[in-house]
Length: 195
Image 1 (tube, one colour):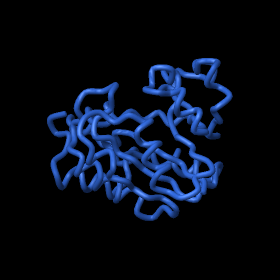
Image 2 (cartoon, one colour):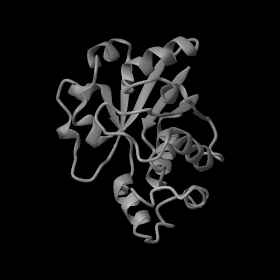
Image 3 (cartoon, helix red, strand yellow):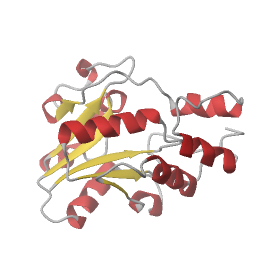
Image 4 (cartoon, rainbow, N blue to C red):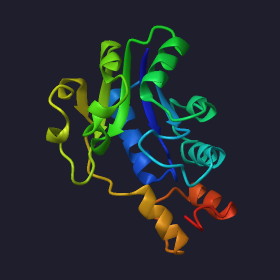
């Protein structure tokens, strides 16, 4: 079985998330892509939207996409989310995992040497599917980790979740940046009005 893990805050989920998920599904052809919203990233502060809202937005955004499963495992864990723990969990959950890709942005990969137990992750055969991010290139990834990375083809989708939250707070139009179903949810639940 070939899996692709796509973790993140998804706060809010936006068209960039959807674009790179589709690209990874096309390019990697995994048996399943697992979306894993974090409880709390070890590199970030608290998320502006509660886990239940981020989960609901993900479910709306990815409702029509095949071979995608949304996991609540990290959301249900206390404390920060570490990718190594999730890797062990997925290997134990799915039988015969032959390949596990982690889908991540070039900006995240530029700091991969800071990830907890990254060397253990590599011994488990994890590879990284890396999508482009503005201001970053493949050469920003530490040379030791480049052989474990493949690039996801496609243009840079320059959408920042923090900038989106600010636009929503100011009442600006973000309809071209967020799926309609997600924007409706944000409005229905008055999310990010004070972000």
